[in-house]
Amino acid sequence: MGKLESLSHVDEQGRARMVDVSAKPVTRRRAEAEGEIRMERSTLDAIVSNTVGKGDVLTVARLAAVGGAKRTAELIPLCHPLTLDGIDVEIETKPALPGIRLGVTVSTEGRTGVEMEALCAVSAGLLAVYDMCKAMDRGMAIGPIRLVRKAGGASGEWRRADAETHP
Image (cartoon, rainbow, N blue to C red; front, top):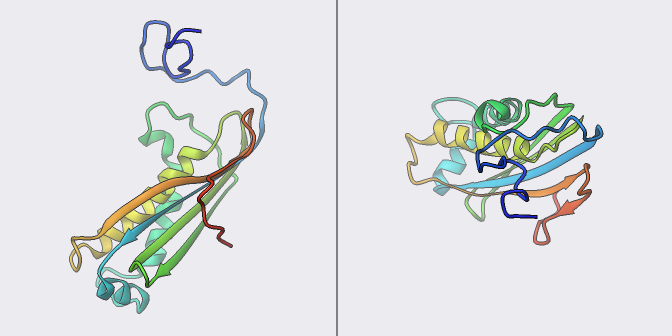
């Protein structure tokens, strides 16, 4: 198999394309992603005490993460629009960073995985934190954002070897 044939998102002429997944079986799929945003301690303290001028940062971050997962196909050109069965968002304040860890688990029954939905959800949630707190801390840093685990489909289970276990 040549180099171009091994890339499923590229046609015979080397042009980007959306993969035809119609022949794949429908299976239960799940993906978990996580990311962090680092900030000044005073910014984290304001988030925890819910005294940020724009409002409840953690609730807005949770809602942005859900919206990010639901709109992934609009943001990532070659992603298939998916019906998502569940989106769970976990937010943890981390005084040692100082900052916030945001984790998202997305699930569906479909022909293609939900890794991109989980990663977009984490990105959107962390960007919402930045947006709400940028007036008080422009030096916040987002990252790393990474896939932690995925299940389902032909490739089965995968787990990042260095991933922490979160409840």
